[in-house]
Image (tube, rainbow, N blue to C red; front, side):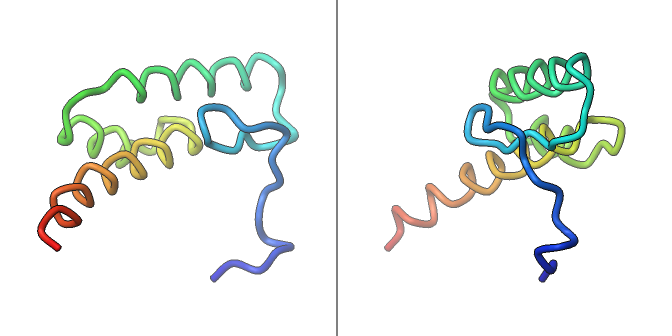
Length: 80
């Protein structure tokens, strides 16, 4: 588990994902576009591939990973 002093603070939240502080306005716009792109992905395999690609912004990768988790979690919860 990361210590508080090792985490990167957020400057805002976009679509439920924290946008890291200390980034240029252009970089923040790029992160938001990437999060929007992840929001539009409708296939589990594409979400997983996006989350695994290190060239994508970390905030968008986290969003993709969370969507993958939710995708898998839904059927499991229905089984209970």
